[in-house]
Length: 349
Ligand code: ASP
Image (cartoon, rainbow, N blue to C red; front, side):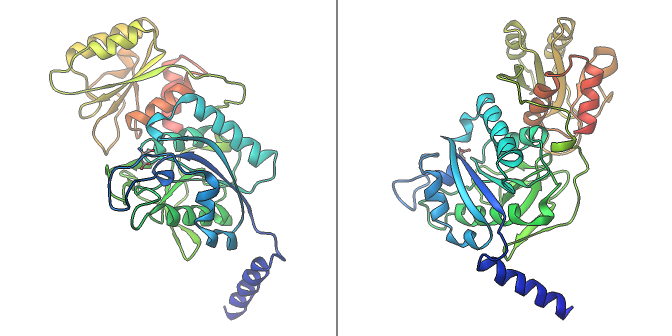
């Protein structure tokens, strides 16, 4: 026991004096509140995506003990403005960094609003088992007790940890590590906003090291059959929200605009208001794929529950919330329009 501790201590000393190479970690900045600036440190009003990547790196010199750090700015936006073009660019860039440019891991700074969608998109399209970690913050860089620097430090620690390898893409916020498939934003303003409602967090960062409790069950990264290398755009998929006395107009608008697929954020177990249901049945007859998910924050949307999916050729989103079901449906539609095949993807990923 003591011998091991001495070996580890020696290793830490060698790393700190640069005798053993530190992992080469690239930080890709995309904006968000972590790069946000406010006129006053106490105001809740701020503008996301203002500060550049080097400023973010300079604010956390402690990371340099953990890894050989460099950065690049991909975009500088609030993640409410995230889009397919940025996702494609980001995924392709990560694949270059990890597979061609010799980086050992990537940390992405990202707004929290759509972080879960970006994380899941990357989980299905990055072709490497090296660590890919998303971090953000809920308080802007100029706020009292800004959470960005601590989250960035923990994210780099996770990316630099050898035991992060092979786990797919993770989000690291508030020292918690959550798999891309499970992570959801649950609070509009709290720093503890990320959870995995059905699964729970899978690990944590403590003293600059990542610790894990579980391995991912769903397929990801190198096991994924989706490949965006040669894609310039993605299929068009919209989301329709369900509620009492629901209007069929939004669903009909997606059908009229010839979207490739529609995800229902249904009530309960992915149920439709009857007028919306009629539009969904007609959409299927036109070849538009329909995935049923739920506006409930927890629990699966079950196949062939109250809705007879087999009969209408709908797909049940199972564990996926509507926004992540949309990501998977977009990628599924790059391969097939066969609803049975798409249902299989929902079981696997
Ligand atoms: N609107 C911001 C964003 O997603 C919120 C945040 O980063 O916390 O970019």
